[in-house]
Amino acid sequence: MAYEFYEILGVSRDVSAEELKRAYRKKAMEVHPDRHGGDKEKETLFKEVNEAYATLSDPQKRAHYDRFGTSDMGGGFGQGGFHTDMDFSDIFESFFGGGFQGGGSRRRSTGVEGEDIEIRVKLDFAEALSGLKKVVSYNRKAVCTECAGTGAKKGTEPKECTQCHGAGQVRRRTQTIFGVMEQTGICDKCHGTGKIIMDKCTTCHGERRESIKIEKEIDIPAGIDDGMTIKVRGEGNDGIGSGAGDLYLSFSIPDSIDGLTREDTNLFYTIEIDPVEAVLGVKKTLKLPVLGERTLEIKAGTQHGEVLKFKGDGVKHISKDQKGDLFITVHIRIPTHLTKKERELYHEIASEKKIEVAEDGILSKLF
Ligand SMILES: [Zn+2]
Ligand SMILES: [Zn+2]
Image (cartoon, rainbow, N blue to C red; front, side):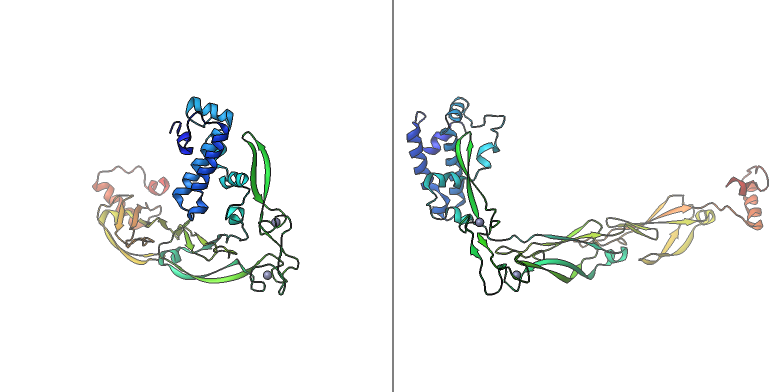
């Protein structure tokens, strides 16, 4: 990288200021992107030529560059300080008087960019699992049909802005460390449109777009989850002389319903069984929210906290052809009330196991 600024401009290291300027003009002309149909490589070259000249034409920067081989002078002159923030065609125009084909008018901006729209869509637990077609309604800005986006009253036309003469941009001269720089900014009189509307359109009041209510059916895939976003291309606000923005639907979905909880594509549920069921084993038919009936085989000797897995019985993955699992956790609930008969039977078990029961009736007090 070092010292290549001289090479870029095709000059020797002892080049005079006058020669440097001539070399720069010649090079800039050669590689100007306007002469090469926006060729990316030429554009890069053009930037390099400008960067080289910006450094070498400034005595202070040139001295620094000669010494250190870099234009980075640190503290305030960093990478973006000069060369990346600047629009080089401005320098170019200040040299050539803007007479170059294209020039400033190439960047005239009379358009309005179509903004994206984000809306929140609430779904319930079951809808997210199954997916559905849902009609969403929202407001979007569409090109005004009355004035076709000109903002002017029917039968009238916008006039050229007197401040920028239709360019939409004005130049400002500022004194910088590199000398007087010309910078281009949006014209404040016409807000960059280059035109002044004399009689405003009666429908959009000169805004060029009107807000319309949209009702749109959206195909929501099964497996959509809370916080996910679906992008619908081109359904945002209309642009004028520029494409429409996109519509973003961001989903708000509860993560549980009646004890059935969702984590990504897996589902979790907890059931309580009696100690006798855990000891002897039992076959149970469960009625789960949303999912419906599932038959559960609790094996004899099932422990508290054991988890039964139903493979592929969870939520469908939103984009892959696979499903998560359903996990059912078994909790053993110790009874706090026993019938007289049950109490007798527990005592019998206790005596069989040679457990010395503290006192008749303490069982119910313990809990
Ligand atoms: Zn203007
Ligand atoms: Zn209008």
